[in-house]
Length: 153
Image (cartoon, rainbow, N blue to C red):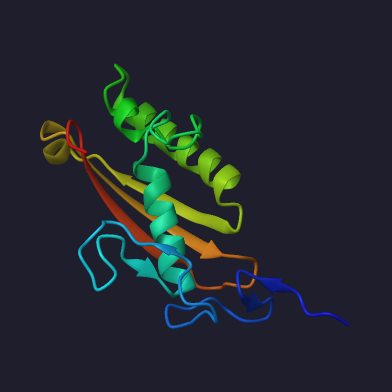
């Protein structure tokens, strides 16, 4: 009987920050920084690369990714739409959920919290906390935070 493998791990193993993959590099971390490998700092840990993939998806506007015009969550575009704050929050949640389900189906969204307090709204700042699980065997939600300042990228 063959074992089921998901992203380099057996299906009964949990993907932790410390899990090393048997092959050397599995992706590129963002933000790009100068490392011993040049400006493309490689990932060797599955969990770190998953976080980088999520960050890349959420912070990209549709049309920015070459050959993938539907890749991205359009957060920056949504912030400038003339709608109420609660509608903006809901639209951001829907876009993130829809895009994550399509581009990163192995990542399960547990919760999305959006902070658009009056103080932050006046400064065009949106804070997003994304709680997620990796695969069906992960039991503890991980958290990834984004601070988005409208007009900056």
